[in-house]
Amino acid sequence: MPSPRLAIVAGGGDLPRRVAEQARRTGRNPLVVGLKGFAEASLLEEFDGPELSVGEIGRLIQLMKKEGCEEMVFAGWLKRPDFSALKLDLKGVQSLPKILAAAKKGDDALLRAVMDVFAEAGFRIVGADDVLNDLLVRAGPLGAISPKPDHWPDIRRAAEVAKMSG
Image 1: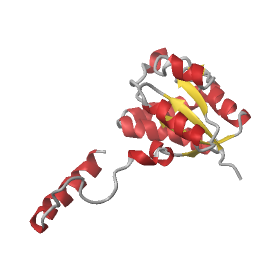
Image 2 (image 1 turned 180 degrees about the horizontal axis):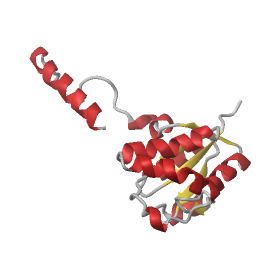
Image 3 (image 1 turned 45 degrees about the horizontal axis):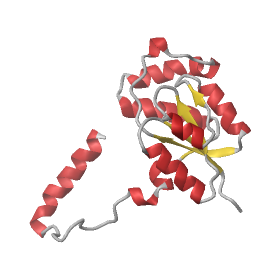
Image 4 (image 1 turned 120 degrees about the horizontal axis):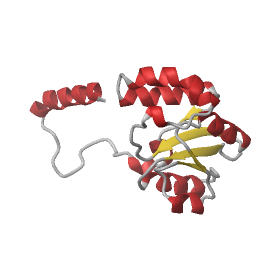
């Protein structure tokens, strides 16, 4: 049985192309949707993908359902939008209060609020690392030098700080 079709919401940079190419190689039949002002035109041409405004949430949901997507991934960089200048569709307007409240809590909360809108619409959100297995580093030392026992307290503390800072 083939994997479900994967929607790729493409921001800027090389990551959306890498995710789309890997999805294609593994039979995921990617639907690449570019975010206006961020996604590379050549990516959208290559994958015959539409371009939508950041605020066209309802249109994106309808498109993904029409195209048979069950999963989606956000890939690439974005700048925080000017909320007063967004082109919003009805779903964007309905979602805006929750998204604005989350934006006051930081970028991570903002992204989680946006992902919640799509999860509530029935899509499974996957990470780019779920598509591109080569993004993750294998467990263990990266070089020839392994940590010594007296290094571990500092390593554990650094991991705590990294987790807290997002």
